[in-house]
Length: 150
Ligand code: DHK
Image (cartoon, rainbow, N blue to C red; front, side, top):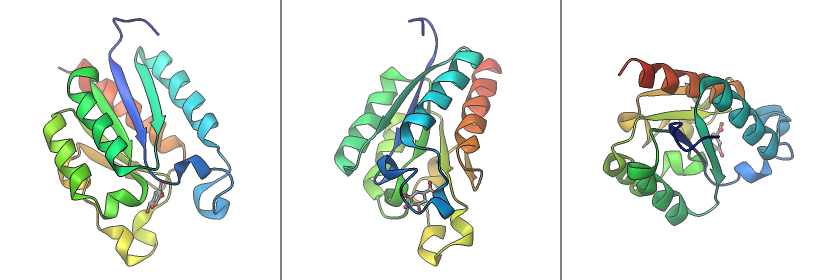
């Protein structure tokens, strides 16, 4: 990773540290370290730095989204359950003014009703869900294309 490469924050919210152990029939067998390695590999291929993080704390996720305002060219955001509940995450996203792609491993629209509500989507460039770990790769590619076209 070079200092001149655009940095993409890949931010993960609550319970995503449990990937691989947690409901594998829904979230798959890819672990969080696997996902981090995948994003770093894909980022390098696209000429992007990938700053991959996970937290179980809403305030920490909000602080990272705020940090993206000056520190990142884009955000790939899987806010986990905070997607469906957090106006604070939504407001942070608006304040960050950084293009954001919302990602979910599972197809949230094919699950419980409460997962169909997202506080991220109205402030996102786009949404990817249901493609497992590939969704993160697609999101990085979409941000790369967007950066190239500017
Ligand atoms: C991850 C979670 O932790 C859930 O709370 C979301 C999302 C879905 C995912 O599919 O990656 O509802």
